[in-house]
Length: 371
Image 1 (cartoon, rainbow, N blue to C red):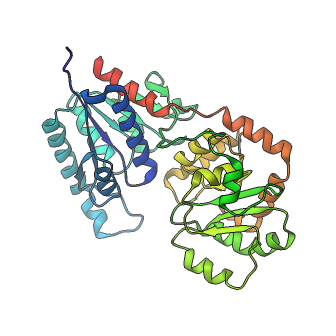
Image 2 (image 1 turned 90 degrees about the horizontal axis):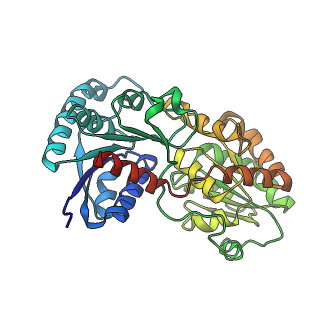
């Protein structure tokens, strides 16, 4: 009887884009290995993963690492010392846990853990979510056994012989026919005789999208030709509620947070969205025609690269953030009323979907341990 216990460290967090792929991979590893796998997460102290991982039933260790601020601050001066302390603590965690492999999913803690593991001779796997790789992952890929990617053309960043196409691991079930559209329309109080646009910018909200809707909502209501699901985000909820007070909003559902995103996707004929890696992967799996408005406030402008990767394959449309307030809604209205264009975008984005990404990443981790 094989009693081998596989001990695997997963490191990723800071944002949902790094955290959720790591959790999805942990779930896939447990499906594949059952009781013969022990998983340890390593995160950054004070970041979201330190609360969310234990809530999901996994153990996590925190490192004192922090990111570089864009302005000169005392925390920037302390950063080199935090990095050194984090690498030392990472070595200690790896040694005490007895790790067989370390997989990094990005975020503050991922780099020191991978760095330490590589210098201890352990196999490492990198999962790069974006189409434009960050500097840290490019450096770490030189000693990584595998680099799991979600986009073509990543040879410009990583050694070609290490790259494997896996897509981005996602939690939950995403499928274009997974939810009844009639039920979804009823959930938002909509009817089936008018197209639906979903405007979604993340749980905190997006200033650009709210300004775009604020400028155009009266015209949408007056014309009555489309229906809109407008997620304001909790940061902007009070402001948007005040602006909309006393104004007609027939055909417009507005809320800080969408509890049933599966219903929102099912109801939508067109999505207006940022282009973070996990969001792009969800939209591919759902086969949703999308107008991307990449955030300009991200490292290496990777959201623009993500959106352009799809736009170049005629799988999505995109517009710059600086143009979206003035032109975004008009472009969305033109798109949602062009059934032939919607069908083309649906077919092309669906071709890019990978529905077993977490299992693929998990199998590459397992394969490296078995070597």
